[in-house]
Image 1: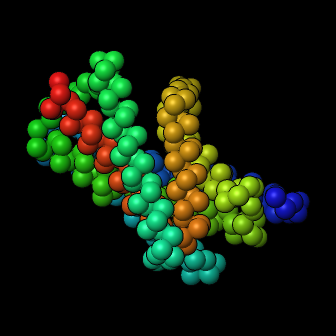
Image 2: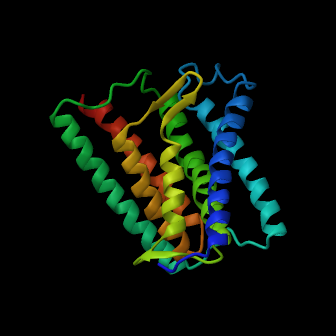
Length: 246
């Protein structure tokens, strides 16, 4: 890994801090606008409408910021098909592994009688609503906010991509840290900081894999597909086990 100049280090720390601040602001903006929408009639159990609106707001704001920065700083955020061969190869492999892991995990949970208990009925509306969120909102919103925006801006701050080892770069690792932080429960007043360490590790690993694919394929489309697909299979297979085997 090539060393950064003192100037670049300070600049990069500032950019990382601004990205963390932006991440927090986007989350608060999502909650603010969500509270203005009367969605309870279509989602009485509050399991998909609120979070879908929240992610849509985050995505819209992030896209506006990206559009402005792409013109102001002449940055390429990789909203393109990029290297299709690599993108398709990585996506197919990732999705296949995700399916196997999801099935294996739920088989183990079934054997141990540890399948998830849902606080809502598994009817058509709830299943379509929750899977619809995972498919259409989780991947697009989170990949734009936690992959393309931070990775591109960190490379700009560094002045170059910083290779750590193999295909793993410093900007991908830092973006994955931001992604993991988004999966913690915290507040300053009252002070609360709760961490699910498995979820933290899981988010970091997936974030790193998707970040590598983003840089290698030069496209955000494949990480979006990977992200949404893995979520749909994990949630959907859980529903299948609960409906057909319990």
